Amino acid sequence: MGDAGKPIMLMGLDDSNHSYHALEWTIDHFFTPHGTNYPFKLIIIHARPTAASAVGLAGPGSADFLLMVDTDLKRQAQKVTDKVRQICSSKSLDDVQVDVTEGDPRTVMVEAVDKYHAAMLVLGSHGYGAIKRAVLGSVSDFCAHHAHCSVMIVKKPKAKPKN
Image 1: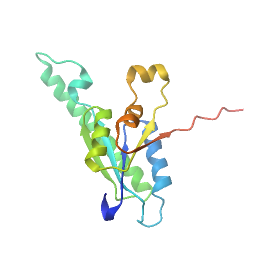
Image 2: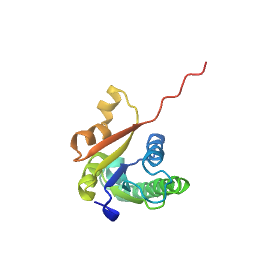
Image 3: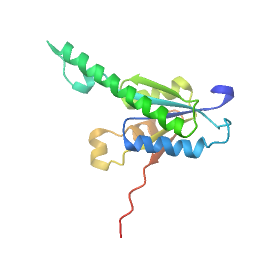
Image 4: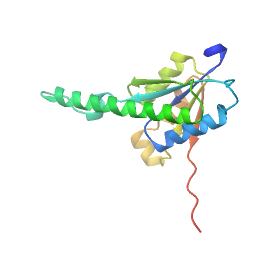
């Protein structure tokens, strides 16, 4: 349980339009501007890859390169954190915790559910097809099968064809 006995809602977020749509949708549907009597305490989790996993190499002379990649990944994580805070602030939701954790997003999300004793995990769907999902792996599919809480997957509506 979170603040004042409220259950924890975790939201996994990356730097994609799908994630930002899911954040806005979640705020609009669960954290409407009715004072501060929200049904959940919202915690946003951003999984930042390790420099070695992002580069996929290690060896002599790679230390300087890995340091540059790590600096860039930290900068990217700060950009995500800033955008999350801007979206939340624009919707008058100021009591949001944002955590950046290093690791594979699937593992980070499942471990965060256990760490915070979350009642719900919210993820955006990238809308991958079966082949791309099989090759890249689906974070939402993994979490739906391994997280010890309810998992809600928010899909971005498809654009309507113009007549």
